[in-house]
Length: 490
Ligand SMILES: [Zn+2]
Image (cartoon, rainbow, N blue to C red; front, side, top):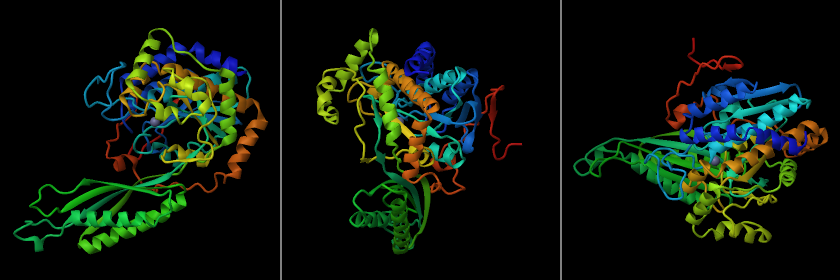
């Protein structure tokens, strides 16, 4: 099937895909609690004839859907969690739907549905005679909780030969760079409470333990390799100045370009925590709350994505949405800093437009971005092609109210563009064994999957670590949907 036919297969489902993205946008749910979104996506996949397994890796809202038979196996994945506090109407002024409620500030309502549209187009190609299988992995809790790590640990990506995914953004380009691996820690210190003035000698300050640890972290910063990043916040430091704090907690992140370096600096950090506890004469408990790999790039897949985009060309936003796009763009003010990240030849077109939709080459080839994503683990197991499409007006920062507004309105054209690009690229991988072989060869050259070891301890419980209740997600799907048995189920 040619890219043009794949694009038609997406276009035929245009209204349904847009409606689904709005339904998820209207009901924003945060990490591990995205039951409504997961249910809608699972039902849509099951309706299209996919076999779906729900609750993969002990994550209730995580799922794996498959269509077709045998090799090769190509796949995509979808995110669908929202961000706390970002509630916003689909309007060009700051206006929450419900103050303090969550909102789709990272466009994950588009992310999940765009990937779905791509997977459906591949299923159509399989019906039309392409050989192989297409997989859609539903990956909850990207914004917090690193859900993909638990799906990866459970083998959800193991039999996939190549995976193509995307993220909402403000231009159309493959993503070819890497990013930082990270470990997260929660440190709890316990001391002895006492009257801070009348009996200080009877107290041992838990806050002192945290402060001494933070001092150690400041000194560590000078003696770690340059790209390492260390961050912390004190989440609980006591209640009153005249009471010696009996308990204090803080959160820490250790980032570095490789897992090895993250582990090395993490060992030093644990040692510093023990030292701080000794100095303050308190007890310390260090819990690893997250751990992900950096992304392993696959430039061959990046080039395949780029050439699918070249086939598709740019897209347009018209009608009432065009006016809203202009207003949203105007609300951002000066975006010259963002525009300056583009190649000089594209800056003028981007500066003067609400949306910049001409496909361009990757902006980050050969670089390591100062961010982390749980897609990193996926990229260690399967060749991962990444891209961004123009769901947002030029220069829109992620996690802004403008991103929420566009995710519920003008962003759908970029979502459909992502669906076409994913579908077109995956169909080419199914139909062109040489292309797939060179994608896999690059993956093997960069180390292959053999060295993957989950960065999270085997007994790590994602819900407990994030401090959220298990939602008890268990709708009556029936048919071709099965639910993984949970620990504690009869
Ligand atoms: Zn995101």
